[in-house]
Length: 234
Image (tube, rainbow, N blue to C red; front, side, top):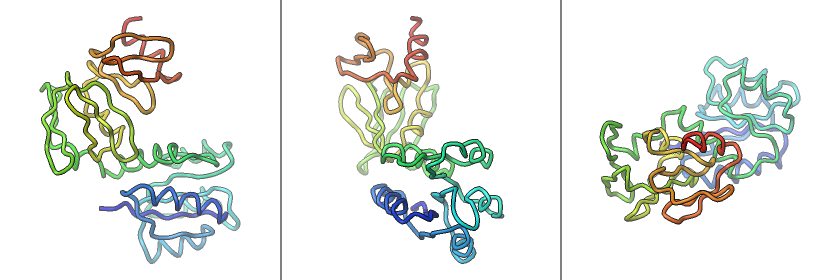
């Protein structure tokens, strides 16, 4: 099932950017665009949306005021040029807060979070997972693969898919990166970058802000380095 999306923003150029980004994510379906919160209220009275990309500073009614006026609140991703509204946005349990101008990569990170809250991930890609076992079953390309944890070298974020590199093959199941991370035992795997998870047992060496797994170079994110080194006892 596609996630029905509504764009609410008084800037036509901002709506154009979000529309193009939505078109690049197969899981998302754009069902409407509104130039202000009043029109959005009318739209939601007649139609439904699972996810709203919502500007904050708009005429007549702000984005935060709009959310407070709703009885049944869809998932909200705020999109704004003003970072000072972030605290109020998260007080409203927003999924994420995108500061304009934002990249497609950052957009996908926010969408991943929304999909997880909407329970649109995991069950379709992973048939069975028991962390007491030493393997998982991964569904991709109409096939189901039994994969040993020890055979997974690393995983890389790829939009609404995750690239899983094993010692035998590369798989691309339709699961978000965060959703895949939740399936892995933390005793074996660690996130070293917002887009990379590695298997600690495959580390060959570390050099600066790079870690090599099976001699494949993986970047270490600045926000992950300290936790990563501590996990290795360094």
